[in-house]
Amino acid sequence: MYRSVASPQITVTGLIEHAELDSSALLAKIQTAFPRAAPGGLDFLVPLNDCEVHLYCMSTTALEFRVTATNTAGSTASSRSVTVVELLVRSTGVLWTGLEKALKVSGRSGKPNLSRCVIEDTNSRSILLTCDMTSPLRSTGARVSFGLAAFFTLVAVGLIAWQLSTPHSGPDREANLLGISLSLFVAAITSPVPTFITWREWKKELTWKYVRSGP
Image 1 (cartoon, rainbow, N blue to C red):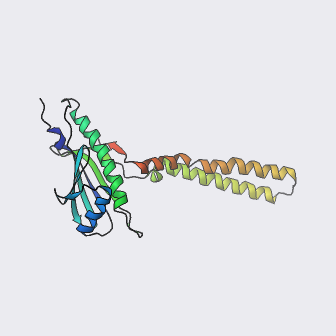
Image 2 (cartoon, rainbow, N blue to C red; image 1 turned 90 degrees about the vertical axis):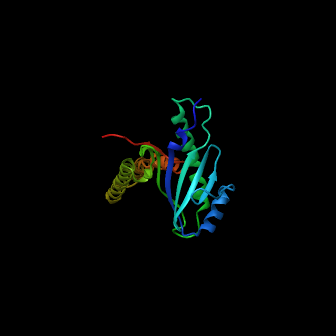
Image 3 (cartoon, rainbow, N blue to C red; image 1 turned 180 degrees about the vertical axis):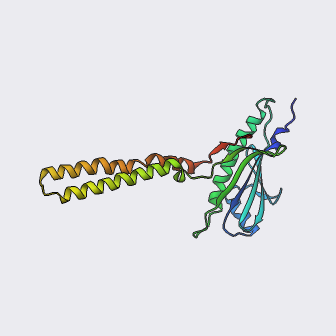
């Protein structure tokens, strides 16, 4: 019979930056998303279905959290670590979704920010997965799509200006203008669409990426 020793070894640690709140106000906001949250652990303890979350107030604007799995009964030795990672990924997503809404306050700086989030082996201090904080809108693909949209727009404007400056008029000019508008402006509008779709999906849930342990 295996003892549940892998669960505490693999944990999620992270840091949330938020608007200035004292500990009592912070707990009250956390309880709006997680009613079972209570003082305990480091500062606060949030029990989830398969994990528990320890929260620590580093300051009035920074909240550190640690997520550990509590339910790995029945796992085999070979699949135990994978099971724990799956539980941690799911529970961290639930935690961030709740805290992102609960800690939001009015004002320009009122939206909380997940500034750090990793899954690590606490025994070896090695990072297994890290949460991708880079918005798809700032990726290389996004810059290319925005560049293409700008290029198509400039070409369309230039061709329209050229058509308007030419001496011929009538149906030919109207057909040319319509063709330019339908082709180039549609291309300019649709080029960034995949980027925005990826961005919307990225906002819905946390995205994790593997961290190489060696060179």
